[in-house]
Length: 258
Image 1: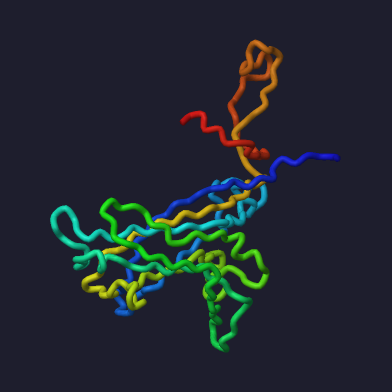
Image 2: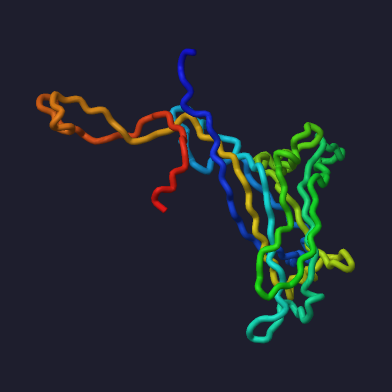
């Protein structure tokens, strides 16, 4: 075999994000469904730098797994107050509906723009009980690779239908929080007196390719002596390193400085 391979790896990352589920809206129309998006057109290591070819740092930052947790409600606080008027354990109980959406090709509504109809592919319904020693409650675990293994369905990318600038934004999951007895929204959606937000934790497993085009500061200095690496006898001294193109690869995780 002639030649050699320098780079062929992807880096596996786990990204943790937090947000508050809150349905209250100033428009007067409660927003009970929360849609979580991840942009796949990003390089989390910012290598490539567009040199020597513009766009060489563009990679498909691919989500492979997503996990979601929520914090249970607490009936009371140390000062005797309550959260959103919640007085009992029964009132503090809520149900989380989570799903991973997919689409089957394009949907033509004969209107501009055309909108896709999202279909639930991976669903999970979880009842969350109040806890005084609060612990995260997992409400969704999805292997994205397995969910979209079939060619029959595709992930939902918003910009393909609405805005070209958002064409790389993938909807990883959707969630709503409802009353476990009625199935109605758990929060009132009142913007004047909003319910306390429910904290949500999201963990995304990412594959980020390593680009073949990178830069580093280095130099080769020539002289006549092994004893003086930076001193020139006849043609000047070493002037320092400069940023140059080179090829890089990740060979392992050491963790020696922990």
